Image 1 (spheres, helix red, strand yellow):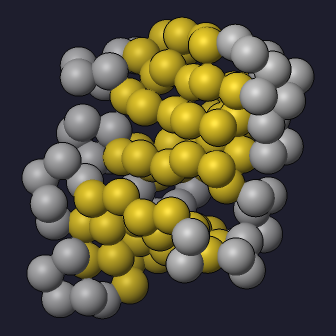
Image 2 (tube, rainbow, N blue to C red; image 1 turned 30 degrees about the vertical axis):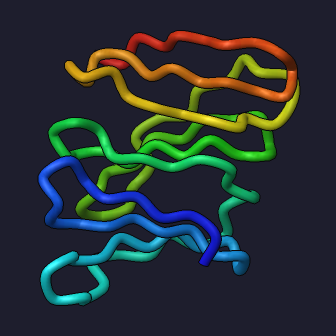
Length: 111
């Protein structure tokens, strides 16, 4: 496992492993909630403030937003020209900020 993050309410954990899987876990029981396979190398991962979404920034220059309960793809954000190194939701959950090896910071409206 290379990346982990808690949901803001502390009830779930999201992880990314070198086998290119993202898993969401119940933090209280340790039970796996869902697994998303065949993701490109993830560099940053976090939950939305309300815990409904997980956002992943990856080496393929994309930012993927997924449903935190099912793992289903919600949308893909494109615009960076090199690996996305950091992603984070705003406190109100209406924006995502991303940083990249292309030396840019981008703001994405997602509400």
